[in-house]
Length: 146
Image (cartoon, rainbow, N blue to C red; front, side, top):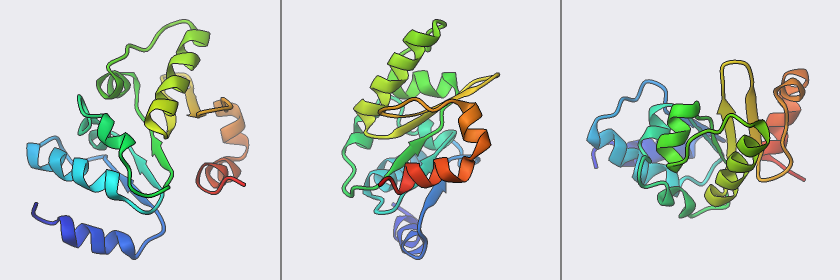
């Protein structure tokens, strides 16, 4: 895979990775993401086409080598592609559904919606108001829980 080695060397020089927006959906890019993200040894946030790369193969995200935190930030369409589950209208069912996805993927799932986001890390549910009031502590907790 072209570039994978160089990307890994670059990542080793950093404490965290953000990947996805603007990378496109070419089959080689999808394969690169499928090989790269499960092997990360640092915390990562995956959005947009980074998430879409795992459509139909989300089990690869469960096979991460390191004990690194992974934050997935899908909008409802990306969520459906990633999990195969539709986003429900009932807020209680929606939270249960996203909590289960977070457990299944061993990841933090931040479901982006028009009016609010649901950052969910297995338990508990954090509202977007809490996140806005103190985003730094929320991010710190996601990556460095005590």
